[in-house]
Amino acid sequence: MSDNKEKKHQNGNAREYKTEDLIVYWYPSMCSHAAKCITLLPEVFDMQKRPWVNMNGASAIEIIRTIDKCPSGALRYSLPETSKVDPDLANGPGNIKNKATDLSTPVTIRAVKDGPLLVKGPVTLLDVDGAVLREANSMVLCRCGKSKNPPFCDGEHRFIKKDE
Ligand code: SF4
View 1 (cartoon, protein in one colour):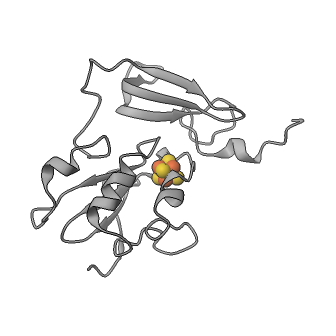
View 2 (tube, protein in one colour; view 1 turned 180 degrees about the horizontal axis):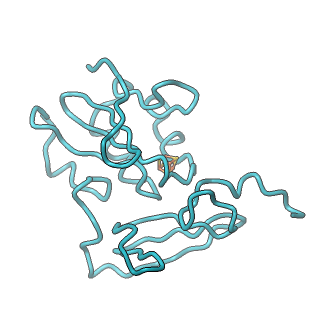
């Protein structure tokens, strides 16, 4: 069990949530608010609560499996030294160490109706000067032009009226 406190991370604006078995990182600026985590594991992820991540709401493995499905990579995890979790079960796409490494996987980009572009596969995203913005195996990019955090989706498309 943890005291379920939220810690601001030194790395950018990441937030950190920790138990002796698992550390969860959340990068709000990457989050597309697709609510995958909230749908899959509402006992842990609840935007109405503070902190919004309840590390005591499910087992470390359940949290890991949910984070592995985060489409934007806004949620990540690592195992602290005290962890009893089998490292082989914590080596999915959500592990903070896993970047865009599996070059054998083809990249797919899928447009979501009235929504963003879902990018899957090992991708390095560069800014206009060629500097690396992000290396990851999944990310969600803005397609409506309204994101306040371009080129990433921040969920703003949900507030666009159909006739706009
Ligand atoms: S992008 Fe990831 S962290 Fe954000 S709502 Fe979706 S699953 Fe949750």
